[in-house]
Length: 167
Image 1: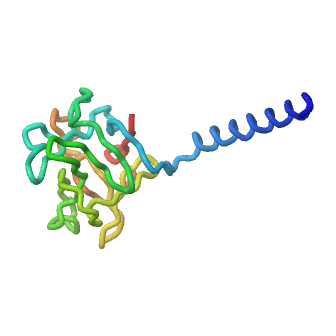
Image 2: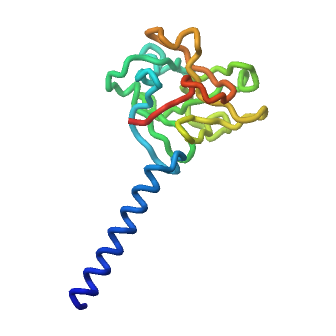
Image 3: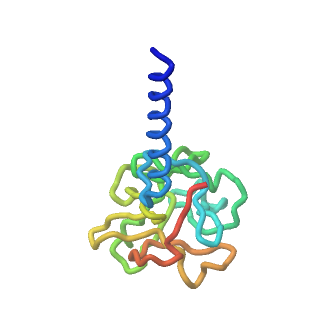
């Protein structure tokens, strides 16, 4: 291959990579199959499994100061939010008895592939399709500033309480 031809090929490759990187960065919809890390709220607090209930059948979820613990490490894979616990993997789950309620209860529950555990991450929101339409992971207004803030499944409304980031 001639030097001029090689230079043109490399330049075209860098342009394609640069374009891909820029368009991926500017695209507000995350289309990743797998994300791993802490999930943070708009206040910088983390989606946390309460240490005292992590081994329970239905673990309590809360907003809590980020501290790098295993209780705050999540894996988004195959539409599920998974946490590895001492008793095996558990998923972010909407309690079946409240999924159609105005404010659905969220819990850490054994992964079972049900629709109650299927999420999509789009435009900074974690969204679940329910029989009554899409609902979002939401930090309850009345506890958003508390040390152990309450999480709920709530109608998607674009508020800051429904904005999440993986880090």
